[in-house]
Image (tube, rainbow, N blue to C red; front, side, top):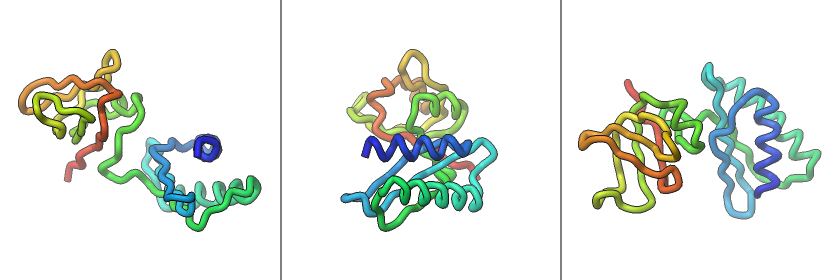
Length: 143
């Protein structure tokens, strides 16, 4: 999967997009690639990336049944350290790998990433969690 991930990343970033996440099913039959771009992802963007990846997979003899390319959605996952700075000021939901004060799920306003610590302003005060201890983090869309 590592070689495949590097290949996908090379193609997607070469087209000017950011990879948010890549998901694969067992035995690699389904590949899901979530892309982003500052202006927002359109259906045409997904189609462009899908066609390019399909061509590259054919040349590289990568066997798969289905490829899905889509935007990360309004509740975009925060995966890389840079995501936590980019989306500072946004409402997020965060789940830790181990409990913090007997709690693993938190919501609040993301303050950013400082010295390897994710900083979130919650109802109970400022929460500091080591980036490595974040199991899951997602934006909370505002309607």
